[in-house]
Length: 500
Image 1 (cartoon, rainbow, N blue to C red):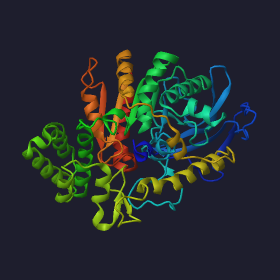
Image 2: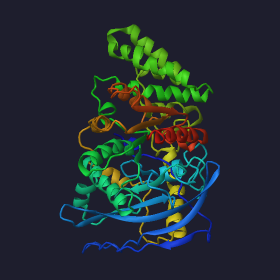
Image 3: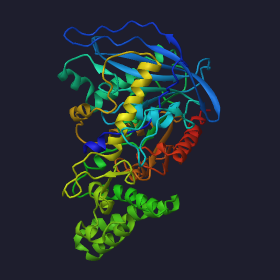
Image 4: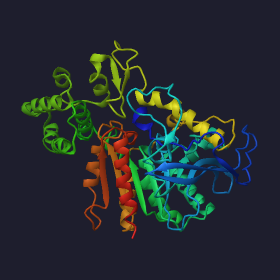
């Protein structure tokens, strides 16, 4: 996978109140001892402030807590500290759900789902015109889920303020690989439930991008190894099957079939013609005639001509460019070519969000992603301001909204479909567990078509729609659009209400 496909962005607006508005409550906790030889000051004790936000037309009062959970090895030695941000409504009964949220990367903190999607406060990012210098000021989030579930945002080791307490070699082994990541994060969820006395509450896990890789695997790990059943899982723009994308063989048409519909969606959106009906036709073409013609290859010149004609029409690209590549347009070529006339570059997370190309005459792209470059500064500043000033959880440590170091150190192993395997096993084990997969039409980092194909290859497990798949206008962070965020909340509430 390319770095841009692994580094995920998701949005979550942390609860930032005006100075003096928050009533503070200190939570006593013994600070974990830092190992000898690690030049790290201790992290603060957990701290809680009371806040409120107008959500769904009514004022919700809640506690915002920043706290830590130790990670221990098999011998009981503390090897890491996970920092989380929790929003809980006090006085609720045991039936109030709690949702644990992760972003992806690997190397992304949970700030994006927090400040952009479902947290009680929201920060604008991910749209055309957003800039690093935008003021890191949040507002009440009408699309927050806090009116029907408590929320716990978890920053994996190496992101946010979460940190390893062991050397680099042991850190890589314990935290920066697919399987260890699932194991320790599942234990963190369990430890929080025990710590807060919430084992009897309905429990949900949400993950975005690589967080969507984590989510079904965590669900099965909790079920089969730790002894915690989930009521539901939500996968946001998930990276579900590494083997179906860049890891596919040279014989596989899957990468082209998966990417084309998102390019077509962006083209339809630019023309004001993006509708579910129009996209149904695109999906039907991609999995039908397009797939058949791709498999014909050059043995059928008429098939090649059909591919070039159809891909040109669907993407809006220059026909000569499409013909030069035999109708097989990779996302990098598309993002550069589709906006070439105005010398801008599209984002892999939403190709209709652009930035000026700093090297427009270069044969190769030489700049980072427009959305990533625009969102890191305001989200980092907003989150650190909330944690240190509003909550008063004071630390001199650096906050990592996105850590490229973690991403580069990650041991990805061999591309496989473990998330899909674990999803199947978790669903088969629990007929009451709800599953929701959501995407944005324009996303080229984790295209919706991959999930369409994956879900259609799964058994029905006794119901026509055990796995609910929804696609909304927008890109990877579709929830940054007000209408898409509202639709996401509406559809998610229905999943939470399925508990009988």
